[in-house]
Picture 1 (tube, rainbow, N blue to C red):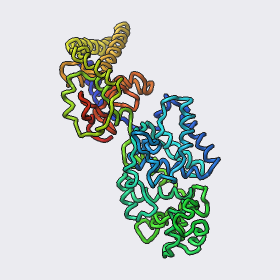
Picture 2: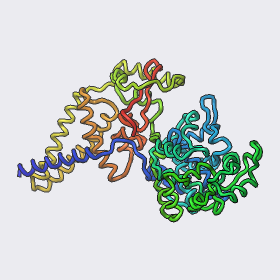
Picture 3: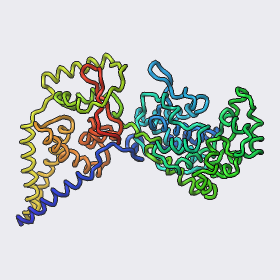
Length: 502
């Protein structure tokens, strides 16, 4: 029986290692991100979006375009919603967005409604993504699963707008290259361009095309469009025309049928069917609406639409205070190993943060935040004995009372594992860093995974798995989508904590 117990013990140990080997270690987006924290978020966004589109059908195209313009400039981070301030130059003022991008007031209204039921929970970036999907559905377009968990940016990407957003004058090669730089295929590009099956364009964006008398535009179509778009610059620049003359308020495949008939309103639309490499895709979509809708949904459902990983939790923020709170002072000397470069040279630390940091620094010098590993080592040895006794009591004995006692002992072992995992996740509890890491992984992350499997993400999970910041964890990850930033003691340079993009 002893040998059998030994074999069972070995099997259990191997099983634990297998569980650890397949555990996720990075923050990730999830369609169920708000299921526990704000279960009515999606239904609230859907209802508000449908009402906005019912009031103005054009708003569906505007919301899809707003999300697209947000994602193509430094990722889906709601930076397009930021207004001008003393420290921000708004993306709204970029030529591609000024007097063009719209729907801001709808997103503001949706955000207000969500805030009324779940204050401070749902990000504007996620609201933009969900509203775009719901707007598509409201006008007969496809639906798709939206991955959630993005954090809003506090910085604008105004200087990046012109080089990252497509222009109505772009050539086919330029469009393929631009979308390719965002991780989108040529087919994705053509499918996403199909969003022009709804919405309107200003005269200034198609004036040259309808007056050039080129061979790539239907003469009758050009004549019709000239009625509300005078030839002289400055005259009627903001006059609107439907991108799809046939069904301007329905999400269908008439856009592609128009291109084949040389009735694309924008030059950047017609180049998709002009004897180039995308002609076959346009023809396919013009014949099969389901294929177009499916491909459009697949392209929109990509987690990193726009090519940049989304911001999650502390990513991209000044994480000095969090770093100090959960790491021993001796680790400051290691920060140079992670220095990548200067990020913000004009960053101003608030007086409150300065006072807090001075206080923490004094505590660190006094050793109040340091932990010695001898007591923890003894605890781990005791836990090993407890675990061995439990295994032997269950597998090596037939007495019912011994089994009950082993179960009770296993409960104590489980609780102690939680505390070891909690402490080692926040700071170093062992004298040796590798032993501390082993204690955290073995007793912390393993327990958190099992707890999440039963109850879902909770306080136990967020304490025991600090690298997984999608749960609002309060630790600092070693790897994150956009690395957190830590300022040095003199507040002159910034450290990027992380090993790469997620």
